[in-house]
Image 1 (tube, helix red, strand yellow):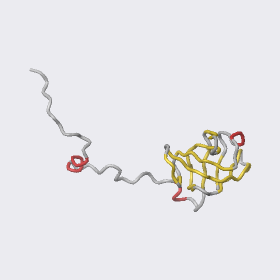
Image 2: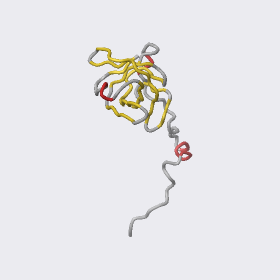
Image 3: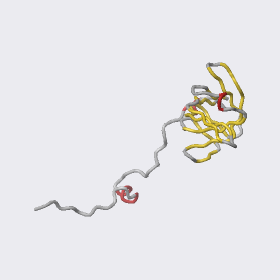
Image 4: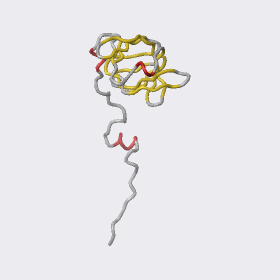
Length: 128
């Protein structure tokens, strides 16, 4: 005698998950983010990579370590603790989607006005 296979309903069906007592997807709050305990307006991000987009400007990528940044805000670029330039954030992109605000924990690309690609390097810090 061989193996018998029974037809089972889709285990990922949300209605069946609720019937079995499982929580709804995305119903749990995420981990607490660091900006909750920081002063209003603080922001910090270490630059991981730098790109130049023709006709747009310079894009720096990295993970926002603290606070929030919004399109139109001024940020300070510093290297080894020494301030270099003050630049304006003209765009925020996260996973190929344009957003208005990035918060702590987000991996983002920031489009910066008034900055050439050779003026910024990996390891530089953006802050308010």
